[in-house]
Length: 159
Image (tube, rainbow, N blue to C red; front, top):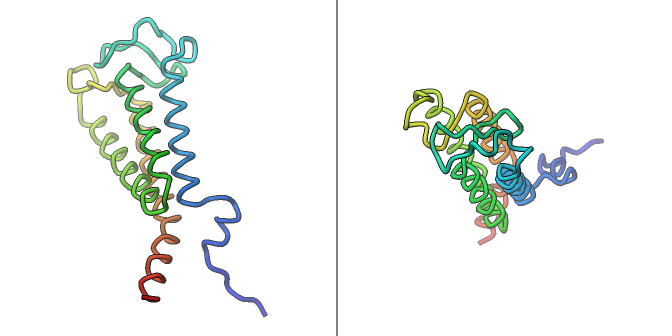
């Protein structure tokens, strides 16, 4: 006879918890922010501006970056690490951060990339990465967030 296990048991065995995932995403954003300030990893480093579409710097030769763009990545990474301290906040980071990235994707699609509206700046590669990040973060927050919702519901029933 087999018994059904809770879906959370499988991804916990893989180390996928809300807290670990938010921490991992935060670390990736910190690394991306740091790498954006390293010549060679960021091509055309001398053409980096504080902000705006005129910045000629390209992280990994693909993603347009500026000082502001790198700072945003660093701050997003710090937020991820800080919010990874508990499951509820980690879930909020993944869902909320994913929503922000979906909004950035839409914004990047509707603006003219050669105008002042592209102040961060974004290019086509950035836009598609924002879509992928948004979907992945929301998906992970929803999938792994079931545990936090189950725990909250169980705790309330015990009261």
